[in-house]
Length: 496
Image 1 (spheres, rainbow, N blue to C red):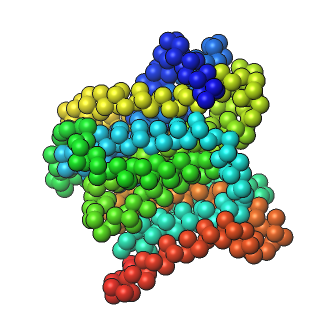
Image 2 (cartoon, rainbow, N blue to C red; image 1 turned 45 degrees about the vertical axis):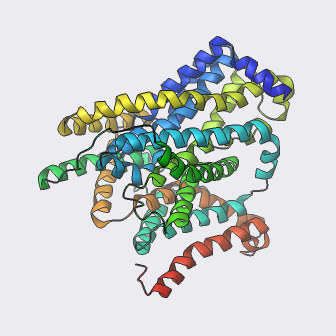
Image 3 (tube, rainbow, N blue to C red; image 1 turned 120 degrees about the vertical axis):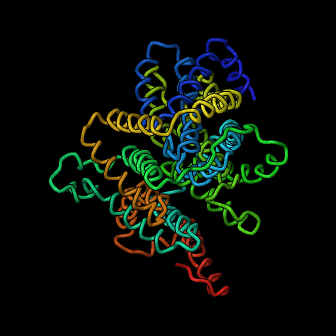
C-alpha cells in the first residue's frame, strides 16, 4: 500500500497528469487511422521522451498505449476497417450494428467494455504483478505450441456451419506466414527472388489491404449493383441500464480472459480477442442468435479482452524484465533511456517510477471513458455526413498513406492491392477473415515453438503430452473441434 500511495502522489502532479491525458488524446487519434498503431507511435516518441522527466515521458507513453487499443474500434465499427489489429473481431458485430442505425450504441458498448476490461487489468497489474509474472514463466515453447493449437481450434470452432471454409482460411494464413526467411536456415521461402519479401508479409500492410482496400471495393460493388448499407445513424451512445446489465457479464468474463492471456509473454491481443469472442458465442448461443449480425455481446467481448491485455502485458516486464508483447518491449527502451532497468530491482531503485507505471495504466482508462464518449459523438456524426464517394476516396488515401508510412516502401502498395482483392473474393465466397488473420499472426510463433520443442525432446512428440499445461491445452483443443461435430451428428446437421 505504501508503494501504491507513492504512485498516486506522483500521478497527482499536475504536469504528470497532463502528459497522461495528452497521451490518451494522441492515442485516440492514432487508433482511428488505418496503418497507424501503438508500435509505430511509441517507437517514434521514445526518443522525444529523452528530454522529459521520466514521470512525464512514461505517462505520455502509457496514455498512448491504452487509448490506441481502444481507438481502433472507431473505424472498425463505422467503416468495417479495424484501426489496429486488436479491433479485427470488433468488425464482426460492430459494423452490422452501425448498418442497422446503431453506430452510437456500438461505440458506447465499445467504450464501456474497453474501460471495464482496462480497469480489471489495471487492478491486476497494481495488486498481483510479481506473483502472476512468476506463473507466466511456466509457459515454455511446448506450452505455447499447444496454446496456439487451441487458438486455431477456437477460431475453427467459431465457424458454425462454415468449418471447411475456416480451415481453408487457416491453411492460406499459415502459408502466408511462411513467406520470408526461414527462422531455422535463414533461406528465403516463397519470395520468388524479390528481396522485399524476405521479411515476410507485414501484418499492418496485410490488414490495411484486407480491410481498408476491401472496404473500397465493397463500396464500388454496392454502387454498381445499386445495393446500400442501410440507413446508418448515430443514435444513443451511452448504453442504457438494461443494455449495460446485458453486456456486463460478457465484459467481466472477457476482461478476465484478456488479463490472463496478456500475462503470457508473446501470446498477444489477437489470441485474447478470439478466445474471448468464441467463449462468448458458445456461452450465449442459446440466448443470442445474431452473433456476426449485430450482437452487442459481439462488440463487448473483444473490446474488453483487447484492452485487458494492455496493462497485463506489462506484468512480466515490470516484475521480471521480460516484455509481454512488442509494445511492452518498447517500454524497456523508454526506461533504459532514463537509466532505469526493468525488473524486480526497479521497485527498489526507483519506486516512484515503478508504482507510477502501475497506477497510470489504471488512471488512463478513467480518462478514456469521457474522452471516448465525446469522440464517439463527434466522429460518428461527422463520418455519417460524408458522401460515400468522398468517404471511399478518403479511405484509399489513408490506406496508401498508412502502408507507405509503415516501412516507407512502394512495394507495400502492391501488397495492399493484392490483399484487397483477396478480401473481396473472401467476402463473395463467405470465407471468414478471422481464421486467415489468426493463422498469419500465430504461424511464425507456431513454427518457432515447434522447432524449439523438438530440440528439447530430441525429436520426440511425447513432450507435448508429458507436460501438464500442454496436455490440458491439447485436450481442450480437441473438445473445441469435437463438440460441434458431435452436436451436428446428434442434430443430424451438416458441419460444412
